[in-house]
Figure 1 (cartoon, rainbow, N blue to C red):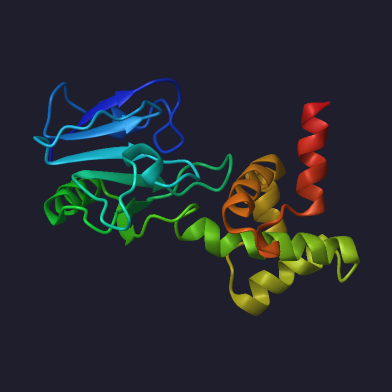
Figure 2: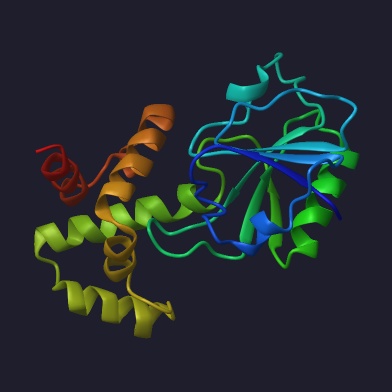
Amino acid sequence: MRYQIVRRDQSRSFPDGDPFLAAGVETATVVLYLGVAPVADLTRAAILVELGMECLGVHTDEEAGEEGSNMLGFGRYRNGDDDPSRLIELVRQPRSRSSAIEAATAVFEAAGFEVVLCGDQAGRIINRLVRPKYNTVLRFLDEGLATAEDLDLTCRLGLGYPDGLIERVERGGLIHHYEATRALFEVYGTSAYAPARRAVVAKARERR
């Protein structure tokens, strides 16, 4: 399915050189906005807004739970500075058009992505699941429960993870983890999302 891309600067979902960017056309009924404020246009099949940690409602306004149109949000999961994954989290609102969801799904699946549909919550699915786990294991390291190597080995051999949680969060970048958890903590206010000490230290060192 054909799609148009409107972008400015780098995109976390589709960095420079990504083949998805090259396949965009000049005009299409599905438009993706990457790092650019979206323009509402109900004549389009779907308007897709690349999200950071924010909600789609930031770009569409909200109407007492009745919001929704042909504008959807999306994020391609990426562990910090790692290469982007093949997973797209597609964000809908209560009254989002089913035809827009179908058009967006068709665009991404035609490009080889796996698409999951989720409600309009800050952090979507994956970040809300994994960030508390990263915080927990970083706190275990601070408390001296085990070495980083042993904690990661436990995750791989005991839980079947492909890599350890400390290895993964450090590879993605503790500063990125700080920024992600800080954004979630501001929205949800629960201790599980409060940035771990090591992430706070990494951010403070960056500022220096």
